[in-house]
Image (cartoon, rainbow, N blue to C red):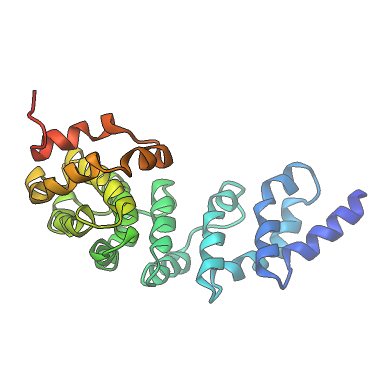
Length: 239
């Protein structure tokens, strides 16, 4: 493909009506500039095609676009203004945990401030009331949000006992991963061992079950990874 044909191909890709093709094109923006296929001024003339993705009604498309935002900031193609901040606030109001993962990434990269999303934290806290795997995912994100200064440990502590339903789950996959999460939350100071002690018999049942070795292989977590939580909730004595 000649340089001229290459540019023509990418011009079409960057404005494609297929939004995922368009995302793929814009994902290559640093390559397109570094390889001299486009000058920065030429990209600026096409930038509306990317900005349309940020505001697209398809939340998945918009979130994928926001994941690319740091490239555009680094290349000085887009500045984060009040409109973009309001767009993120709009997205985190959606009933999608992925929106919060993207928001957290933007905060961790200093593209947004903790305050830009913390005012909507009540929306996030609802994910900690889930009775399925989403709750484990939400707790993983919660730890990051604490480190980012978006939410405090004391604000999360009242939700820790929501994990009990998963610690007692008949689904051994959920039980396995939720006990590992319980251990993490205690270590992080978000939860207390007393929050989970009533479920210790379910932990013991998990460790003795025929499923444990299979689960260990699947998740690459082994009996030694459960020693801390066993001590914390009194399954084994603290040394």
